[in-house]
Length: 78
Image (cartoon, rainbow, N blue to C red; front, side, top):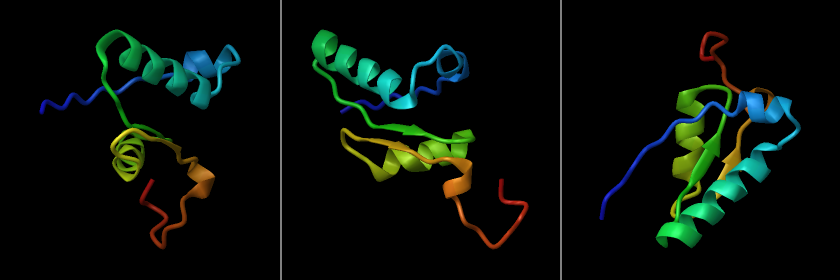
């Protein structure tokens, strides 16, 4: 089984009124329809958080982790 990791900056789509959930649903729908593939999508304030979110929702999920959702003891974490 192959695995592909793709990082996308959807900031411009969000500024045009598309929610992260809408963008994710479209990506998942097209991958399933055109290639018969599933994917996990994680959205976060940086690449690390997005990747961790994606891993939390395998094999075919979606999670959005906002900066205000993160609670850590180290102020330099983000």
